[in-house]
Image (cartoon, rainbow, N blue to C red):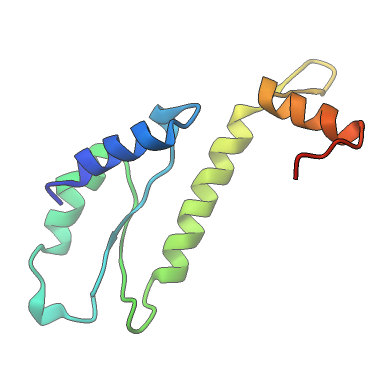
Length: 115
């Protein structure tokens, strides 16, 4: 947990998202099936990073699949919410696209797909 902030910062530098301050993250504590070998308590895990950064925390197990689907659904929901927020709705209910998306749509209309 001590490295989470630096990992997040490094990810944002490498990925260079359009809005790094609102890029969605979740934190996964793995191997929850090995409770006897736990190093960080659930309470401490949430306090150390997640509550300070408004980041959802899931304790997961790759072995038995516990909370894996829930974690993926949470990050997908966060990403979808943020994507919807990026569109600006005009008074005539049109959508203003960013330059990259606008260029992609022009290419698609011309049949010049970059897929």
